[in-house]
Amino acid sequence: MFFKKVAEQALNAPNTVIGEGISLEAVRMTGAESVRIDGTYKGNLELDGSLVLGDSGVIHGNVEASYFLVAGEITGNIKCHTQLHFASTAKVTGDVEAQSLIVDEGSQVTGTYRVGQPKSPVPAITARDKAKLTQDTV
Image (cartoon, rainbow, N blue to C red; front, top):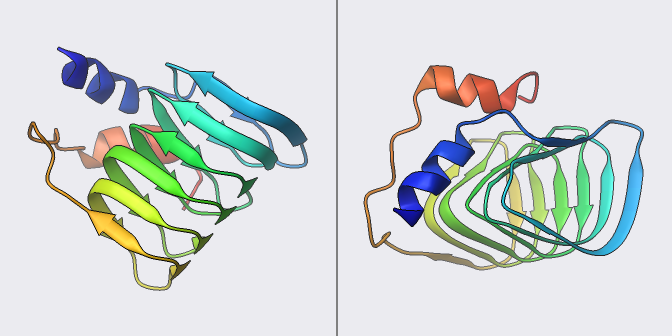
């Protein structure tokens, strides 16, 4: 039941957007919805939903999310409960823990990887559903 809910959230358009040119500094952001960051975020993120870091986005802090697409820059550790995707423009400095990992050619990652098998099968993300999440990201 939990896994189905997470999969549905990962395929939805983001509920919260931090736009390009916006800088937000916080201790921690938590929530169960989808978030997209095209600006700068300083602080930790703990999301039950999905997170998209656009190619102009920057995160300074640790991230925990169900689904995470990284096209921008992140300095911090990442923990992803389903699928973690590093786009070709991703620049990551930190340790990575994910159930499933996709690394596009050209992405830059400095840190250690820990990738495991999910307890339940990860639902396939179709090209159409991925396009909803990544709108103008990659």
